[in-house]
Length: 279
Image (cartoon, rainbow, N blue to C red; front, top):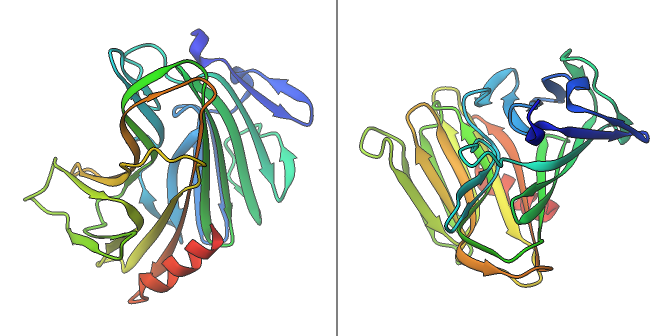
């Protein structure tokens, strides 16, 4: 086993090595099912809503990626530098109680939580995922361990299914960017600066989602955006926390995202307001 794949799970005081974990875990809470997997360094690896796949499984990567100057990409889905995520620790909780997954058998519960910590070269990432009450909450804290120069910082990556053909991004000043994913922008990236929330909609299925994002750092990096990549196979959505920065040891930054779904012709504004209050 390669050293970068060594993972420990702390559950009820017991440390488990990666080979003692199932390759993935699937948990359903209400209308939402999620998968987290060893493939993605124990990040999300699939999302379903009311039994329908809405975010791709095993065909795209979620999580965090940092583009270090002079080194390249480090993080989920990028092993070209043979770094990925190291010093990885992860804990699981069902209905608020520590849980030790031992198989890939699907589990149902009222709430599911995963907490993990890993090192992405020079920046430590503490990540928490919580699914309950129809919401997917993701929290990230970044701690700089060594001086870090990067060109871009991607958080909260989600490879949404290609059934989503419409997008709308509402910015913090109230202005909007909206449009459709089609052949004109296939394989291209669409960027919307200073986002407050975004929504994708699948008109054939009449399913949509809203993602609200918030920078909760004491000192922000600014230059944030939503980046949408119409890859054809999916409509990947990234939160770009910053571009081109030099960070010093001891600096910390934190971000939150919360996502939920709506059906039919329900207005996403109502859901966005509810999710913003929940943050």
